[in-house]
Image (cartoon, rainbow, N blue to C red; front, side, top):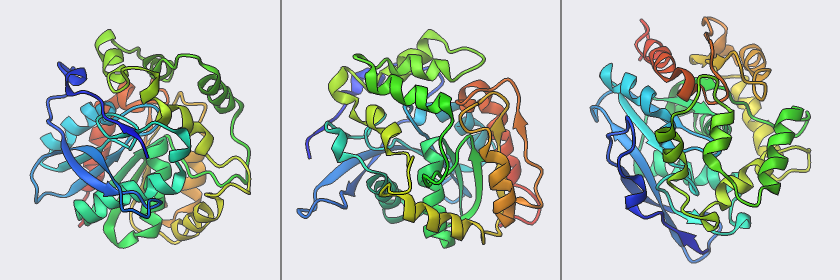
Length: 308
């Protein structure tokens, strides 16, 4: 597998993102020679504090969670925010065929369960961060204490995706030059500063670095013969028995995932006793539009009376 690594100077002077990256080598599950890739992550706050795992999605990186991280750390908790393979400071396979749903689940599992050995973690997953994170929760329930699902779901291909998602997928597939920051800005309601837009473009010096952002929409199961369908169905079965706290924190202006909130609330037993917030004036990237608010929601759940 050929990979690229974004030069460090591309990440100079990031706004509101003071945390230095940490790195880990994770194994490629499909490489018989035991090749590894370097994954980057932010690890902030006391090492012995309750840990919040923040997983981003397409086409962002851990920078997306900067306001959430600040709230979590200010509350005395530990925040771990990885960059998915192909994004942020993590290594970037140059071929789209080097990406698969299963590989991304395994890469994140290797980082957070093997390398970091996280236990009693609170998952916060948005977009692909939820698709990957909910699989991890379902497959390793003993490692997680609670879940915050934020503008996400777990498609199996049994139901069609919204037309606006198909429009996004076609736009990504057909763009001669993929302007990552503009895709992020289009998913925000309150606007995106020039400095923030530059931060979203930073991981991708040119088109050769963008195999990850280009391929991720095609990895979402849209038919029942998708290679991820059976594993995702099995995850739903496990989640239907999840009795630990499961909070949906969706936004009021995301036409892509909005319908998933009520489905998750009905399906997961751990959602029944909770009051599920709707973050106002926030789009698909609610961490940008309402990051501080989302951070406070997460802290309140972790610090709720009776929580471990």
